[in-house]
Length: 161
Picture 1: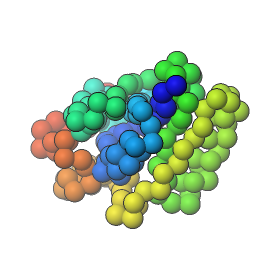
Picture 2: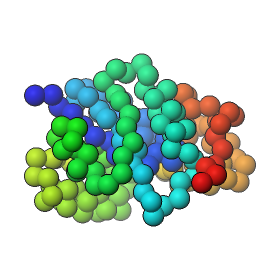
Picture 3: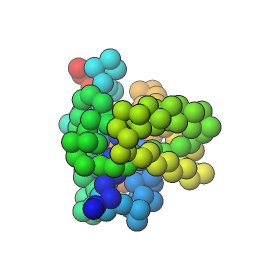
């Protein structure tokens, strides 16, 4: 049986921290599916199609990585795609407490799924999508926090939804 991991998130935008988690998890799984969640309660900063294209470009050299978009419960997507693992990155102890609660609820809803946590490497501990969006929103240069496949000068404009 293939070891398929789902890496869910909004990736609004993808950061070097996200990229690092996926690259470090590749040896652990046969396939990693990056799942961009659509949350109707939350307004995205970047358009969904742009986020998906950026992620596909970043991971194009890695055939074991694919990208999907989804609405609804992450565990329902896991069941649909045959993913038995949910991959999550942890930057801080606050992340752990939040992710632990979600992981336990996911386990209760879909007992076959295991949540796997990877610690963020020290250089990316402070990097998160919110801070990157704020840098961009205020005209700063966020290129050092974004993977190389993402071109900041062309297309990195807020969603007009």
